[in-house]
Length: 212
Image 1 (cartoon, rainbow, N blue to C red):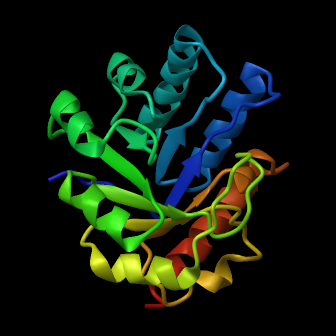
Image 2 (image 1 turned 180 degrees about the vertical axis):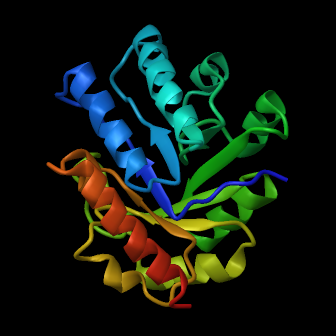
């Protein structure tokens, strides 16, 4: 049985940053209370992605935080990451499971109860559901209602995390939904104090988990 905590799911974004600044922010975030981390790089070559993932994984191991690689199973396997996250247009979860085996964490992005049930049936260990709010990290954002999020939480027996434009000022809409945690990108990556922001968001997430 894989053990992991999705209370504060941190998704990285190195866009426009020097590598040393990016890695500093990552370490600050982890020291502030991040419980699981996803590296997401849409515009890097495979070699560049691997290079950065290796550096991020070194930091993650130091803080005993699982590293999830977005989309790229090859990169996840190459750097020894703990998991991979798949969107609706990525490789199907059941195909990925055949490749990586039972030991690796597989997450899936879902927006409906039907998608959620299919992902779990096919072997997903957790779900990311959203976007709850419009985001600045993706051009195309399909919003998911809080009611749908609540329905998904009730329908599946794996951790469900809300994602999309979440920050410390708007997470209150997630009360009583049954989520296992929140996913954040800009709320940490664009913060001048990533450690403090992570600490505040972790506290908010823990409170939301108790609101069921």
